[in-house]
Image 1: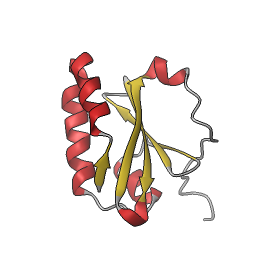
Image 2: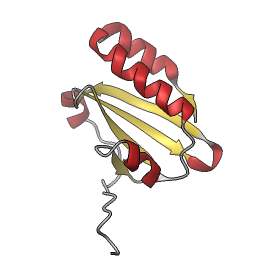
Image 3: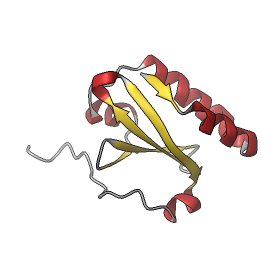
Image 4: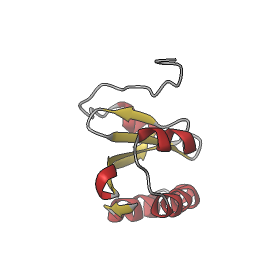
Length: 107
């Protein structure tokens, strides 16, 4: 996948040094991935949450940080929209209902 908005990650890592390793690992994995849809993300990142409009929330460093991206599966693009602490995330309004990918649904 092609990552767009990497400057947000770089700036965040400058002020949150303990996020560098986990964010670098996430970036490497995403750039090597070719996600076709949400289930492929869920298979690799079981704690990921999904919002409307193809937004994905990743827990970084044991849920210390939250990373919100928008995935454009058909184009192979992941747009970094926001990163912050879990407490900061709780104050955000990302306009959309959380939805769970539950493997039991439809079974």
